Length: 570
Image (cartoon, rainbow, N blue to C red; front, side, top):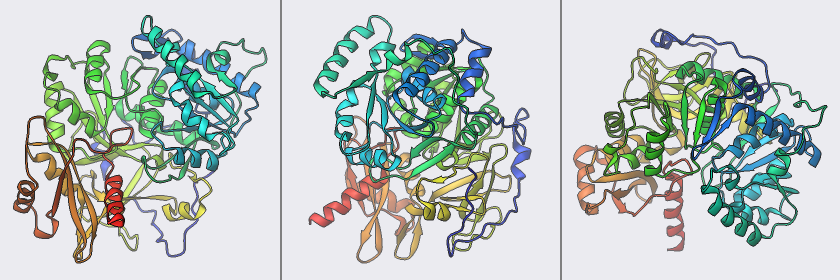
């Protein structure tokens, strides 16, 4: 497949001109261009296993899994999937937390010539039904905890095969004992017929004529649905070639080596965790330290014990770390780099965690339509606070006018557009939406920002999240930054809501640090002292917690939908 260039009627044409002034600020070890091998994505694992078979690929609660073990398990799973009737091009769902079986399922599906359908365990029944029906997936790999969700899909979708694995099978003794008993009970309670144990497939003898399915690098490798935990997402089609290219970019930018260890707490079903943490680590021949869920204290304990060199996270994780009263007692000095993405990083969060660890927090940017990360601040070079950094090798970016798509000079605000060897091949079964997003080979990100004189990029907001108060544009990022500067705030976010007079008004949702008290009027006064009148929030609501996605992003859209629902009931 090739990236679509069909243009919607009225869609501006983006020019081919690019000003790559950012290249002079690359780290010395990062070349402006890379070579991208034309290989299947699964070849990354096989190559690593051939070069370092006894090196640890993944570690789960201390139990190591070598590259040899991972390769053998994925080969056997691929053969087993073929035996079950899975054919090249079939979609296979992966409904798993971070665990060694996720890696096995992901690469085993690819070796069978099938397409990975990563699924968020927080998806509602409605969303899962949509994803299975829309993708046509007939097979899923999951754990006993999620079997009730899977049971509801039988009869509502084309799901035929349920492959189940127990987390206990990957845990060291004695952790596996209690977990095994619990998972046995969950399996019995779910009453899902004809379950296929994953360990039966991965434990079977490999057929003598087995070979991984040969695939065209331009063919579909991953079908990943966009969106948070509300609404129905679009299927984003990612090719083998695009995923491999992103791995090469990540390794080059982070200067990853085979002795690096990455803490894998970001979910692997998410583009950031999938491409940077999992595929990037395997491409470099490094080690993943897998944690199935984020709990701040468990993470800092794991960092102290297993000594990762890199950590990938989102800003809310570092807020949680900063609120651990005894974080200073943990040794986090093994960390050399901390890559931050998926949401804006505030000054307060960056300065606080860098002071605690001594590691560099490297803010970057990516989106699933380009696999994931496609730019960041340099690992060793100049960091600019608030900047999402410089484009990776072979990534072109620029700022264009919001209405007509014409190129804008440094310092001017417009939409960020990019082109890259990592671009999606389109939205699944949505040619019109694909044409609205890709113009003349350029991906229109929907993010508003600017480029400075040195080629560093900045995001001011999402085009779709722009709040218009009385005809004036308000960028939520500016208010969110101010929220985190208040000493009583633990977490917070602003939301634009309908207003009969101004068009929209601004409401802020806050959680306070332990032991703190405050009133809405106190915060409204705080904002009015620091913002132009039309930007100042008019409402403040305190909550015990804010709704978040699986990777920890505060869900602005969900808060807005809650308020709109209240209005309808009233």
